[in-house]
Image (cartoon, rainbow, N blue to C red):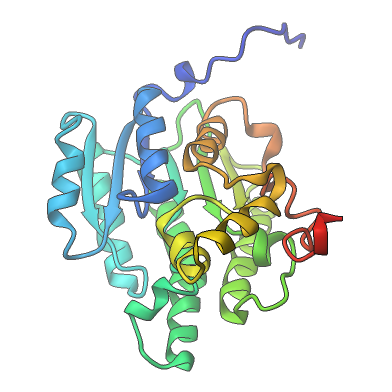
Length: 279
């Protein structure tokens, strides 16, 4: 078969598809919701209990194409309920954007002691991501149409790609687990109409990154930190969301199984932030 090159347009293979974006109220998740919506998708997004007002405010932007669902990745019952509710609302789920996670600072909201925080980190970022993939696959097997289903997992440059001195062990371990899960699922699904990917963002301008890295610095320290990043800037959430749009489209199938380094170069030069003088 001869394929003729044509201008890249992701919209036709995303329009009217149903995407589930976990952690859709802020940061990368919110950017993904908006980007997929702009490309014609119907988007279900999740939020944590207590954020109902913010969820309803987002739905109000496009009530016929958005739905909101409570999700607590620590609990298998919550995951199953979420998948069931989304499927009941939209009749199917075509694209899973497995984005929700906790970081080294935000995990403190769940537990006071370091050991308990580590357990929560692994429960949400690794076990929760696993159970969500399993629930999605269980619900959608046998309901695949002419376009492949998409699983887009989120790992991190720390753990998924590279090692950073001082990086919290449980954080890196949880992200490494997601990268492994992506490759393993991809290996098992090579014969199926299901594409599996992982994205490993670097230093992205999100509330989670602000809390874990920047909030403890003064203005001068933040400026010095940013100056040592690739391109001397943080990655914008919208830049990561654009990658999600491509992976959600019909063009991404050749990348099945890819764990994508989306760190703007930090993954290939992890010492950049600590190299004196940037040399």
